[in-house]
Length: 262
Image (cartoon, rainbow, N blue to C red):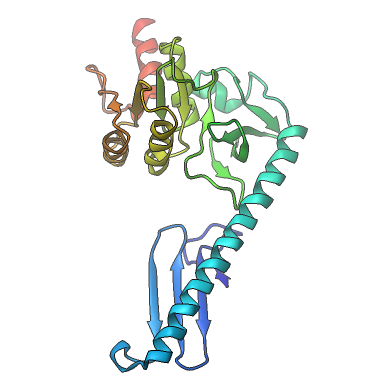
């Protein structure tokens, strides 16, 4: 079963739970967004009979199977919906307010109404979902998509013979690609996904020159360091001339251009 958490956005159902009222009564619940999880049994574990323990183990395995099947179904539905939207979307306007603010070209972006549409793919190029960026910069992912290990391309195809840099967001990835034309840069969608994308790249190409490029905030640096260690990658050091106002490489590039032009 699914339910809305107090801090969920409209339409989101982050809470999941299973409840078995038959003896011994038991259940499990959690929040898929935060990863929080708990289990409960109406009887103390020490008081369970051998048959009750076997029944609980069976329930756990069945619940895991059903949850996996439900997750896979959501992922398939999201991918199918993403394919339809992506096919119908028009090329992004270079005058889109977000592109102008970030000083980046449309690149792979398409547009649906007032929102930019960005593809989220795996290393085979298969489309798994979409990110939408509104004119005011608000971002959201298509509901139910599989994000772990998947990324937004910024141009160029990852391959073992070219360095691969992994940034957090699309604008930052586009900025880094402009600064390093010989490098393939992809966006992991957020700091929390850096590790899964980096380890997936390392699994696919054991000898690739891999660089993790997190944002400048504390969470970004922490997640970036964890990803770099797990994937045996380098981490892009902070620029030497970093003003407090810059939170990522896109900010820094824009600041440098302002300084250069007086």
